[in-house]
Amino acid sequence: MDADFTPTGADHDRPSQRLAARRPRPGQDAMQRTLIVLGLAIAAIGLAWPWLRKLPFGRLPGDIHIVREGFSFSFPIATCIVISIVISIVLWFFRR
Image (cartoon, rainbow, N blue to C red; front, side, top):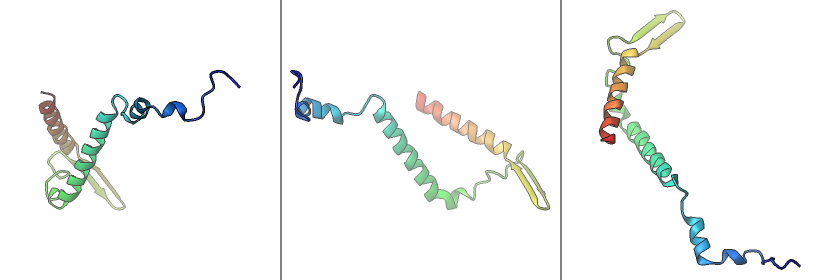
C-alpha cells in the first residue's frame, strides 16, 4: 500500500472541511437574491394582471397596428419607449 493512502472519507470528517463545503461560492448569494426577486416580481405581475390589462400599453399613439384579412402585425414602438424610460428611471434610483 502507498504511504499517503487515507481511507475514504477520513479527511472529510474534519468540521472545518464540512463547513467549507456548505459555504456559497463568491457571487452565488447575489445570484440567489436576484432569482428570488425576479420570481417575486413575476408573481406580483401575475397577481396584478387583471388591473394591468386595463392600462393603455400597446394602444398608445405611435404604436403601429396593421390588420388585414388573415394577417395582423403589431409593433408597439411608443409603448416600448415608455417602458424603457420607466425602467431606466427605476434603475437610476437604485444605483444612487
